[in-house]
Image (cartoon, rainbow, N blue to C red; front, side, top):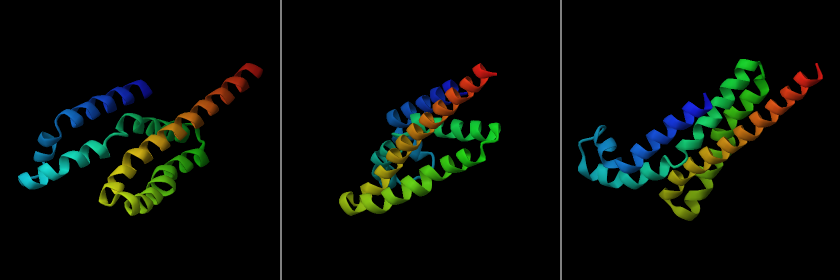
Length: 131
């Protein structure tokens, strides 16, 4: 699942980076809005390739019955990382700071998800070996 999630995310990310104007034009007829949104879509989607790791981690923990870990990871991206970044970064970067908060929170939460799921996997292997 992680491999496919990463591949799909990478594919969508490349499409968004290569064709932002065409993607935005699908949702609006305003050429002014399309031009203003190009950089925003590129910035906002920079974290897309690692975002799948968090989703896979939450799903895995939920499936295994590790409710606390799944709940923690669900809160990490939005509440613990994105909201503070979206409040702090605009003080230094203006509106661009809000858009920068998206990929930063995706990257950090993806790394946290990877670390937690890897740690839990090794714990499960040790339990399996000792049985």
